[in-house]
Image 1 (cartoon, one colour):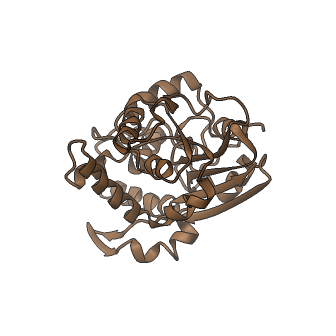
Image 2 (cartoon, rainbow, N blue to C red; image 1 turned 60 degrees about the vertical axis):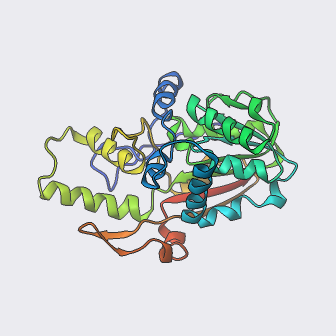
Length: 300
């Protein structure tokens, strides 16, 4: 399966701001991602929960919050579909979903570009008394360190759009899947309420109110958008992020025999710092139409 090539679209963003960026040199983006994602994805949420150190109880609290905040995740992790299967997770974060997979009876393997998420996942497996620590590795999604046709399922929730070469990452997932195997991938939705309406409106409001001390053109705007999606405790934006439409997602997964795409997730509706409408009632209506994320289930 060949990686997709795209003409870069810019609207409704300022001229020159790519929505699906051109591939970056893998050595460069891998190095940047290894440094950035060494701070576990979910650290800000953990601190908001008052979690400042690792313990079984703190991990339980975090996982309970996580699965409650993203209730739709359960449908993608059904035990009957993964039990006894060889499963690879790419992008480990705080380890919640990896633990869900491991506890549901699969032969779990994990891969992350950064060392700390790998250490976290190994720690979780050891706490559970589960084997598999040696099957959790530091490595790149752009060069998955497994032979072709190794896995029955590959999960990557919110990772591949950060790799710098989305087409290549999806091609690698296709390569390591067995025939009939499934990929479950989450990518940011280019046509979401957040991306198409909320962030452009917020940016315009900030400009009109003079809230920016300086402007460094479209590069600065793109970085501001990336930081709104993913930033570390220093306030730094993720090195790279792609946002895709349903049509682009279908093109990226064109080498698969079946593809299902679902919109999920939504933000609180906020005005002047006050939550007017909480996100929960919106998950099953607006979230299914203009949700922040696209969940792609693709069969090889």
